[in-house]
Image (cartoon, rainbow, N blue to C red):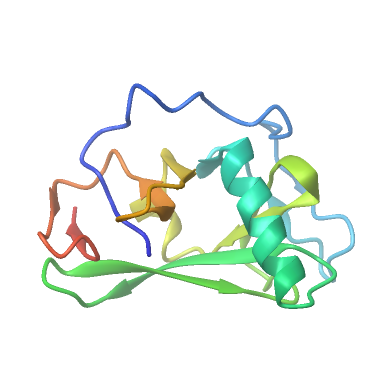
Length: 146
């Protein structure tokens, strides 16, 4: 379950050391997909959980797609899914442990500056998006507005 928060949490440790800040051709992707580290930051704990979940599903490559979709109580919600490869206009964010996170061009402006983190709380835990652009979060915790 993903939640949006109106501001970045002070407790988040900061960006993964594996995230470069430049754009270059996406190695291993047909058509030279852009790699961009400025769209979102993925914490090391989140990368570890993504790798663990991908392995549990039998995936050899831990590639997670983050997409913003219309819906929910407040207008938008996050959709997370594993992907086999990037699409032509995806932002590819490299993270720790060989994890890559994909963000499509339509979602990028909404999540820009966000941090994807992992919270292991028993109630409300999981992968969470800390989005500084979110101006409101619904009480359900699943939707947000910008």
